[in-house]
Image 1 (cartoon, rainbow, N blue to C red):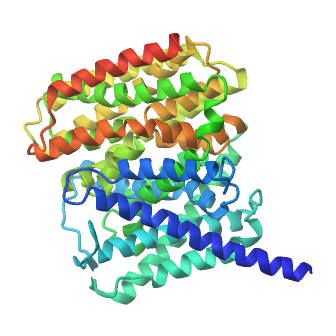
Image 2: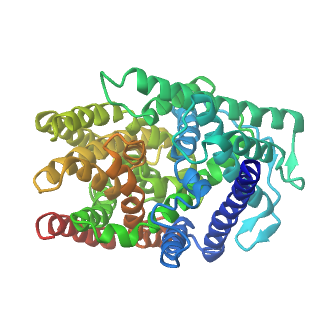
Image 3: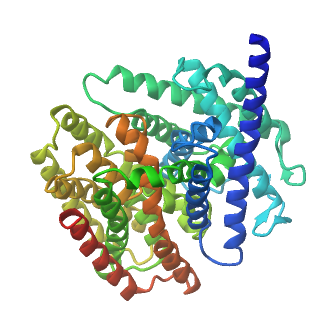
Length: 512
């Protein structure tokens, strides 16, 4: 009987694997179909479909909040670090090129097949999307297996998940795409998998080693290591692993996150105090995004998408905008700039997590250090805005100015926001959750998800993070209009939206 139960459980695992594939991949493809022929990003549609899918699964009685009945889907939602490692590596390469004055043409090993398999998605893009799903599962299962993490119901099945994911990703290559050197291309893919797993393991051990001194989550060390590797190997030509995760890693993670988040809609709305979190998160999304753009437009005198999109992605460590940029939805220049502009502001996370770690231990925000960081942010923003006016469209000068602005605006958004939240009755763990949601901030999201701010916040973050993405119709509509307008952002709507966001923030904190 025991053997029969094990066989049934193994069969259920395979069913969960296939079911998760059939839920997430069509979600991404449908999103690309809906925006096909437009300048809009498919991530907006992924938000809506993901939340709706999670909600329907719970309402229909198929699952409970958190989707514990779909463990493979839940696993995908927890692979944020993998997608970020690739982004940080590419960002490290761009940092070296910009600041080291390294200029050369990158040799591509893969030439895409442009045959449209699904409306809005070419054959090669479809393969990259499926491969990213397999890589996320395979790499995460491998890392957990090697680290000995056995908290999940999937723990005993990590070996088979690792096998299915990694082997499937290695052999899944578009046979109609042109590959310059097939053996080298495949070897690069295997090497990249090994390196990503190594970074996950090293960053976990580093976070545990320094835990008693400073509570830094593993995502911080993953950023440092992958960025350093990118800076050292700045000439490295991408293999299939990096190509797939750079193209569809973030959309796949977000699809999983939104689906899990949608499953908690009913539960969260019944909890006391979540209305203020959601209100601040929603209007904070509007204010920090459009307020930052308003500064660049009216004081930095630039409304070009090549500056606004990657600049604000970096200035907020913004998940959706980063994904839209790296996927190429907002132009080639935004795609090339985004990884670096996300990396540099992320370096200040040592201050964020240090201050927040100490704050959690004492039960309230450290006010004086937060004010000091806020003032530093103001100085950097003023410096960046002054310099970007004098760039005369020079690529390197624009990048350096955007880095200054992005670093400063992210400090203002985080510490200014936390100082504002400290004036309300909201607890610190809920404040951090609201802050992560209010700027779609990858690092804070990963830190909360890892349990840095308690089990309750870790359980709720997928929902609060997902719900504030509903503001993205404004974000991607505005960027879509800009792309149709010769990549120039309309000025007045940005100012109006930033004012609405500011008013909404104060209303959610002091009236709700």
